[in-house]
Image 1 (cartoon, helix red, strand yellow):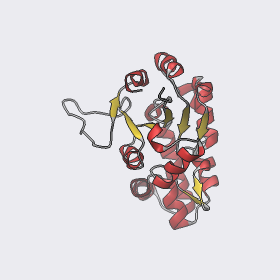
Image 2 (image 1 turned 90 degrees about the horizontal axis):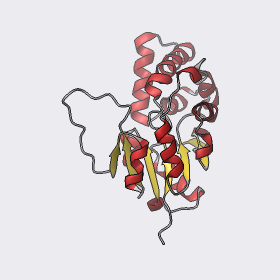
Image 3 (image 1 turned 180 degrees about the vertical axis):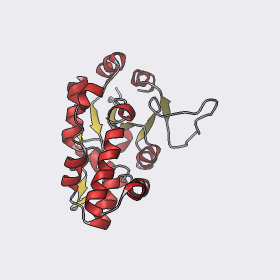
Image 4 (image 1 turned 120 degrees about the horizontal axis):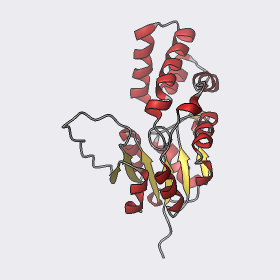
Length: 222
């Protein structure tokens, strides 16, 4: 009998609608942090944040590498988000589908642990998962290596006791899916919370094994 797959779920814009609930506040907080600690203002701070996110997959990595920012301080300061719980929402049908999905299930997020646990507890999904792997768990040889780092993805598979080919990454960020596919993982692109222009078609990507608009669609791809 084939062993069940091991599922790795991104958090923001995969398990919940972060575009509405938390991203606006996060972007403001990160901009304010850059202004306060790097001396940049307004559009300069926003441009730097976006540039580092595009280049490294996480704004934090650029700030640590080029400006000596302390990762723990940045994460704590930017992810406080007052009244976050009141803005969170999750689909009950998706929750039921995840509960029925065979195999072990982990959250794999570049967000800090306090924020991830706060979100999962608020939407009532924490008990659905066998573990929560956050950016604090993604350090290798003293250096943070969050998604899309390939070495980290291999290390995560080893840590949970499977080969990458038995893992499925469910994620909204194409670059993270591309890295996961390159190390042998299966990939599922969550597009539910991504804006789409009327009449446009999403590009086909060779590294995406499946595309879904709701978590309950995973039953078809197990």
